[in-house]
Image (spheres, rainbow over the protein chains, first blue to last red):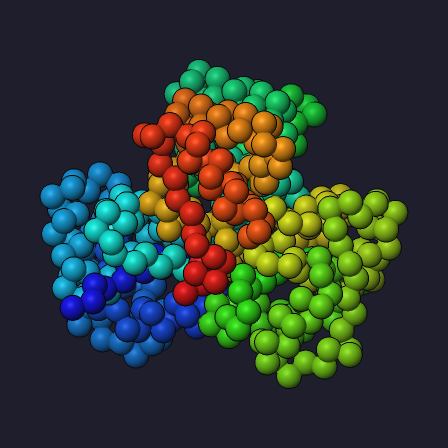
Length: 207
Length: 207
């Protein structure tokens, strides 16, 4: 029996945008997939509902996936692929495997000779970089900066030095409730000649 | 008069995929935009035609944009925005401004208080990273490596060292006709414990 495919399926960045930003390809694959490994089941159900595909959510099987999913659980989660069923990975927002769970499952699939199919869709990081006007010829993504003030300031200084040395745009994330604190730390720490850009909210990114 | 908006519009990575991978949002914006700054006029015409939007290509105005477009030309290219017309930027493949022209126009728009609207769509770099199974928690993009063999080997060694030190996935590009040479250089230069992934062709990325 041919093995199933592992689809990496981007999700929306903001509510009520699925009909506008999700491609026909993703709609078709979601409509034809019955097993999903997801970061958040409730969010994913809402995402799939919002696509208005006419699928019955009761017939879809969801399993949780996070970056700490142990190998033995991974074996079980991936078993349907060995038996010919397709599986879709959907993270809470944006692209699975990029600043989100998924990479471990993909690595596992490669080891087992399972075809991995990444799909194009929303990524807050890419929208932020495109919208910044900074050079996209060289950039790096660093996830979250440390929360501790001293460590965070040191991290900011290190990224700034690397940015100047390597002519590289630096991208990092913050949770909404810590955004203002991060902005303050950046304004205090960065050199006046260093450029900084921040999209106002994830909602903005899709408008 | 309100100023126009500058739309950053992703393009397809492979021919005959537009109907599948391009979102309704992008279709709508292209259908309603009459001025485009593009990396390649012929490719962009073909892209817009392939969307089957029913637009008359004769009514669309195309201007070339590259990363060396001088400031005085940029002023002229951006003038319609000041007069209330929207402009779309479309690169040859993937996302404008990321490893493609566009960033200079965006920076210019920010200076003039023009709203910049990045849109979600295909990016070969993101598909490659998602599909690799490498951690997307920390990664860097470096564009093209040097062509000179000695410089290239040095660049590979430097990226490998940084990858180990920073636990960072390293992404770079190559033109199709130099792909095999790059693969050979990587196999010769990289440590046996270093992981490497390569999507076979851009066509694969969209399947």
